[in-house]
Amino acid sequence: MTYTDVTPYVKAGQRNEIVVRVEPGERAGDGILRGPVALRDVEPPKRIYFDLSNPRQADVFMRELHGPLMRQGVDVWWVDGGNGAVDMPGLNKQLWANKVFYDYSQRESGRRGFILSRYGDWGSERYPAFFTGDTYSEWPVLAYEVAFTARGGNVLVPYITHDIGGFHGAKLDFDLYARWIEFGVFSPLLRLHSAHANPREGNLRMPWVYGSEGIALMRKYFTLRTQLIPYLYSYAWRAHQESLPILRPLYLEYPDLEEAYRHSREYFFGREMLVAPVLDPSGNQTVYLPPGSWIDFFSGKRRQGGVTFTAHYAVDETPVFVREGVIIPEQAPSEYSNAKPLDPLIVNVYGAGEGSFDLYEDDGVSLAYAQGASAHTPIRHARGGDGLEQLLIGPTQGTFQGQLEERSYELRIHTTDRPSSISVDGRPLSQWTWDADQTTAVATLPRRSIRNRIGVEWR
Image 1 (cartoon, rainbow, N blue to C red):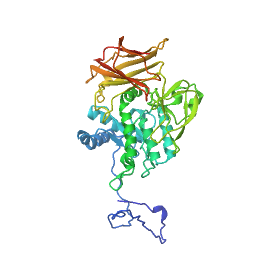
Image 2: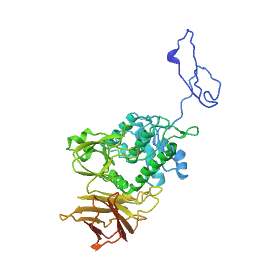
Image 3: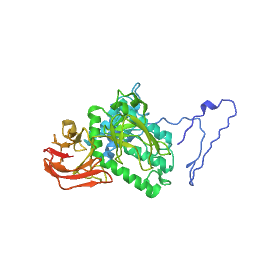
Image 4: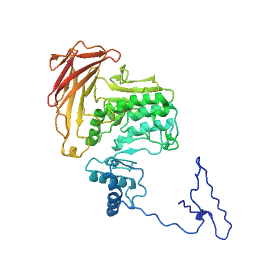
């Protein structure tokens, strides 16, 4: 039923003309689906709703309406809005709705709760994650979302997500679609959604809408996203433990550097990766690199920091840089994030210098991590004065259900020159390869106990 109150527009004793305008749709039957249209001086009955600030009502709302669906397999709730959910003055309606859904989901399932919702002011970081609403499919909106997401950590929110491609806007130009995909892959959560997913239109955010070019783009970046799960999961732990965001504005890493406050549309993805998404159709992007030595994540090109440069990036390229010496763990490509055990663990070492990474693992589902059921594997990279590079992996500390007791490793050394030798635990390694195009040495380390330390050296 559609109800409109016209009281402010009519006066007693005067002739009043009321016109109902119906906009026809594109399909037969659009418009007024059921008649008749009636004009009555009768207010419709008030809505029936739950007040989630009332504990008894909140319990019935979740237990009776949502509990059966969770027992049928629903894992995640999208709480699109909470403005009508609370009748308690001074209580943020959205924040409380988020809390009710999150707490019940975790209690009912016995597993980690997760919801997708809107921001509900201070305290919202307890109930992840958040999306930025029904945005328009425009270049300025994409640019705004980049800066907005990077600033989310300022209010302790580590998980901000967008409707990739925008919510309002049919089929986009491929340039805009591609740039939104590239930003989405280097965001806390990767998610496609729009108003244009329905039986009449299909789903206009799917890659095949753009033919082979769209499929190739998504295969490249979505595969990379899955490979980076060990890196991302370790930073998800840090966000939980230390309230440090996954996306970090430059000034969070360089608080004393004035230039870091001038580039709001660049950010760190974790500590090791710097991302500067392309934000206009020209493909040109101006990038500021903080002081130090940097490596292009995709091409391997070296750049000195402390400067700003402009470069052109093809539609399937995006500016991502890593600090010299860093370590980035990956997993093998898979159909989804936890399709396979983390075996082998791929360890990427970029250039020379000092680097370290603390790999975090747990069972990925239960609440046992809160009682310490988790594991940490330290990975350290150092360079000696004689040019000898050294990598130390492990030993792993901690246990959890389903933990691998042994694993193999694939070491990828991203360097400028082919190493003259590689040794493992003091023994020369004969089976390794050199990719001249990528300037990368690849070595497979035999399976061994995660409780043993591995030492790798090369020069």
